[in-house]
Every structure is written in C-alpha cells, then in structure tokens.
Length: 345
Ligand code: 1HN
Image (tube, rainbow, N blue to C red):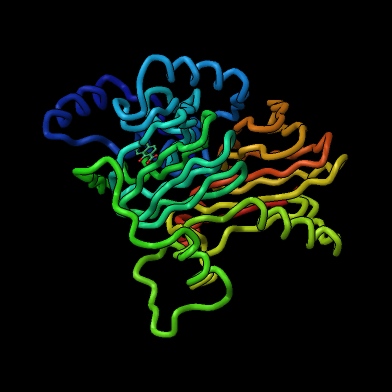
C-alpha cells in the first residue's frame, strides 16, 4: 500500500473542519495501520540481573512489601517507556520479598506467572493452597484467583512476574479487589493440586472451571528432568534446540489462556538457525551463557538475565555453555485469533 500524497491546503483545511466532529480521514493513515508485515515499537533489550538486583535491594531498604503491596521493579521496554509493558501485550517485573515479609492477598482479572530467579523457600498461596518456590519453578496465578506471597526463609527471594496487564488494559477489562486479611486462609494441604491434577489422573467428576491449568506450580526439578530425558533421543530442532511448552494437563492447551510459557535446552556450542514469529517473547535465562542476535542487536546473556525479542524480528541463539531458557509470550491469544505465524530461515 502506498502512502497518500501529502495533503494540500484544501485537504488540510477539510481535516481541520471535520476534526471537531471526531472524524479523521482514513487515507492519511491506512498505510501505517495495515502494514505488509508487523511493525513494532518494541525493541530488543536485555536486563542484566546483577544490575537490576542492586536497585531491587535498594528498593528493599526504601519500602516494605506490605506498603508497596508488591515491591517490583518493572522491566519497561525502551520503545514503550511509561506504559508498564515489556511487549505490547505483556508486562514483566522483578519482585523482591525479604525474609519475614508478606505480599498481601488480592485478586484481579489479569493472569500472572512467577518464574523464580533467586532464593528458596518462600511461598505463593493460590485459592487456599500454598506452593513452595525454588529457582526455576513456574507458579501461576490465574485470572480472578486470590493470591498472596510470604517469605519464611532467611534470604531475599526474587522472581520474575509476567502478566497480561497491557492486554487487559487494551480491552478495558480490569477488575481487582483486596482481601480484608493479609493472607488468605489455607484450606488445602501443600501438594493437593499436583496430586489431584498433575499426575495423569483427574478426579472422576471434575470439569475445568476455567481455561487455566489446575496445576499452578511447575517445579524446575521436574522440568529439568524432562529436558534431561528427552535430550537422549537428540531431537534437536534447528531453530529451538529442545523446546517444550508448559501445558494444561486437563486440556493439553497452554497453561494459561493469555500467556504461553516455554522452556528450551540448548547444548553447549548449539547455534540456532534464524527464526521469527509474531509473538514478541520474553526470555529468562535459567542456566548457561550465550548470545542472542536480534536483527543487528547482540544480547549477551548469563544466568538470571531477562531479555525480550520483538514480534517478527529474525533472531538466533548461540549457547556458549549448555543453556536453559524459560520464555513467555501472548501466543495463546494469537493462536485463538488465527493470527500467529512463524517463519524459519
Ligand atoms: C501482582 O498481583 C503481582 O501478585 C505482581 O505478585 C505484579 C503487577 C501488576 C498488577 C498486579 C503479585 C503485579 C501484580
């Protein structure tokens, strides 16, 4: 589509006349609205954990988790400053909870994931059930579920929060409320949901009540074991290494309706072939060091770093050491809307 010729004085005057009536000429913006390929303000960017951690610890001296409600430094995409967004649809932040602190119970329509980065032994409670958090664990707090966090360990806990905040904001569908207690009452023992839904068995009359996985914790120990078992068959994808998707065991679909979650193993020296997809993707490095080239940007990463690859940006990963990457994106949304595309090479 070509852009329309520059507006002459007669057309410009016409635009001015119609503007007070909340009207605008499509032909001036059509080419920018309907582009031949995705065009995004999102930039490839990396946050080095050691640097963010220092600021996070300072935040820990400036405000309590209780006062902040959630003590988080938002990872804002440089192309979306001021919008609390790492991609156009998704949010990312690093949350700190110090020993003895509680992040009070609330619920909201935004879905969230926690990917544990540092520390061990804090818990998240979701709808009356607690799960203990260790590095590399993925914990989900589905839309409209009560959740609170507590750190009974003697060390700071940090995790990456991923939420669909920009997506829900775009839809004007945000609802939230606070519980009138710091922590929700515990109504089920630790391990209940994994036993009930996460072992290839389901309660006989159980029907899913939401589109989110009833298993709200995916411990890294099990994830790592899966990668370790499957590597023996050497099914390496040239663009992904060995890549798995976190699944809802009740449906086989994505673990959450709005956020897709993935984990991949890249053996030492593995260099992926160029790849692009329409879901801008947030990566968290679990193990190893390497480099991701995105267009002409080079992102050198190590453990605990977070980086983002924009929609439709050709990229490739090089693992200097054996690496495990966790990632999330809005792929489930794009798939449901028949929008998702990928291209190799
Ligand atoms: C939230 O509920 C949490 O529960 C973290 O830990 C970050 C960012 C925006 C809105 C809600 C949490 C959040 C959030």
